[in-house]
Image 1 (cartoon, rainbow, N blue to C red):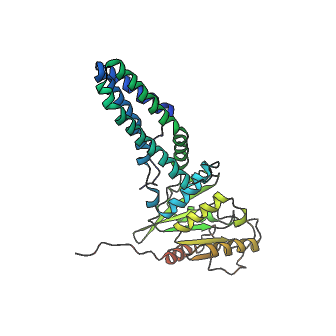
Image 2: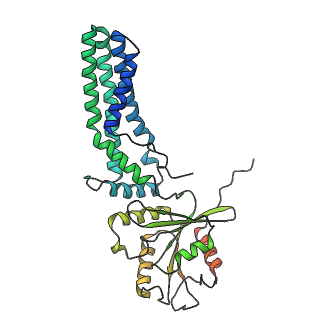
Image 3: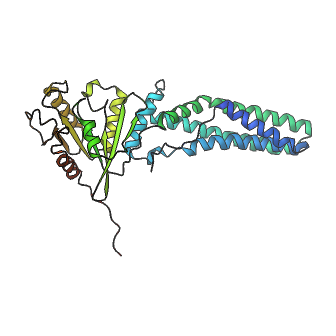
Length: 331
């Protein structure tokens, strides 16, 4: 299972759509004579334009049916993609899709308005009416030119979001830089860790996986989001943290009591307190680099470099998640 925005088709521009509709119509008309040729051209141009626009709309998942994690994350990503919109984010995306759907329906209405008139008129009248219909179809498509461009922008931003699975238990790893988060993730997860970037920042997200008792866990490291005080995050990054609130089943906040990481212990604990206040799941304080110092109150102490109590911390995270595998009922 991949994320819901993967595999979306490329969104055509208004110009591409008009060119495609009319070139196909010209070929269709060339195979027939008289009024029948004009009718065929009208039908082909209408179908190509309306079907392609409707396909743009129906290819997108129904936003309201998505997991809240993806709704929040998409809202943040699209908000960055549409900074000039009055109401950027998911609402803007919905509005753009709605406008394109309207245009698809309008093109069908134009065809229905003209098809019987084209069929009844003499050849010159039929040709004139067909040209009128073409001009109106082109106007409708061009009216949603900006909407098509906006959908293309959103698609490009969302197609590369990290593949995180809300239906699988997730342990989020937080803490200031250089406290040992990445080393821990690399140590306890498989070698196929995925590293991707959030589309709206240079921030990366690292997702590792491990299994315990036939349950697949995600270990999510979020450098650039949960590694500094909340007031230092911009609005889009704060919204990404909101997405993580929906995802996390437990949070491990790494602390370096030795201060070797370069950040005062007081600042590290303040970040821990902010995370505890925000996340409504178990938040465990993990004092890493215990070979250098244990001079802090923590839930667990370990040293990744010395391989001391790493498995114990992982087990504590599993216990905090307390996930039960759903098994089919016995017959």
